[in-house]
Length: 194
Image (cartoon, rainbow, N blue to C red; front, side, top):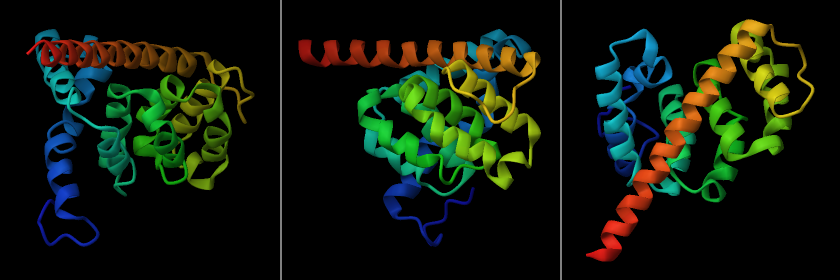
């Protein structure tokens, strides 16, 4: 992602936001997504850094990332959607399904399950039915696993390995959401006491 101030389509505010919350994190999200497959200390340090950044993210910023146009912005918008009150970003997360590509579909799937719940099923089904949803059969199966998890009927049944992969990813996303929200509560209590 280029971040020159003359990049077409982005405001200065968006460029600053993307520099701070997208470029700083998207390449290393594997440390959160698969912590057992990497150096555990590096994963913990990165997660603490991500959670610290999430304490100041606003719902408006999440919306800007989800509408940012690129998979990197959408990926981090989905992750940071877990850091703010669900009611404040539900619409932006749901709207993102109309433009998401396969690279950002995984994080958006986890965010949708946790932020929106069963109301996300129609948007997920539409994604799987889109021709580009099948560009990567693994992505379509992953989203189908989420649909099944939410009690819906997926367009195609995910295989058990993909279902297990989705459940593992959802557990990680739920833990991250819990960390984000705990950090926000701590910050709120600390600023109220000052």
